[in-house]
Length: 214
Ligand code: B16
Ligand code: MG
View 1: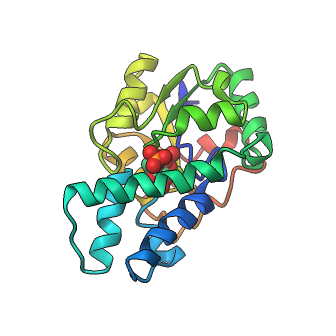
View 2: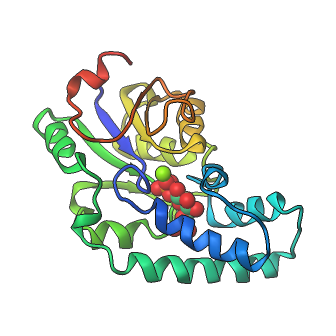
């Protein structure tokens, strides 16, 4: 068994992926850049500024840093408006049961999210106390696929990457885990997350056998 599990937030613990998509879609529409849920896969796990740059690149556009800052601020207002209504009902199915199972087996729990909104979201859904080690977008210089967020998490746990398993729903997050020498469970579509060591469709009904194939 691993000594710890490090969880991504958006798309693994809470159902915020649709909210990010709606907010980015509003920005893309303003710029007349076509933007679909398939395009959105490329933004998952990626920082706010880098996400904006990727949308502009999809439309073959460039903007000044000031304009990018204005657009990301606007996107975040739309996003925060949606997440301000979050409750424990927005925790993804199976998550609480799996956290309980890890606790029962003395496997440590940490958060590794690119999101600067992570602390607010954890409070809103009532899970802040479940993540004594919590690394988020406010504490890192490099967003996924850079491994910094997970390496900092392992460091705070006092563990090496090989003792931790990362749970991720994003291509960039799986890449970050692998680059940091972590084992990685992909949560979602196995064709999208093919670089993960094992892929599960969602967090429902997971037990400790998930670690058997890592
Ligand atoms: P924010 P995760 C990531 O969170 C999201 O997947 C990604 O869509 C978002 O752009 C990024 O956080 C930054 O979020 O704008 O709230 O700072 O999946 O790493 O938990
Ligand atoms: Mg995610």
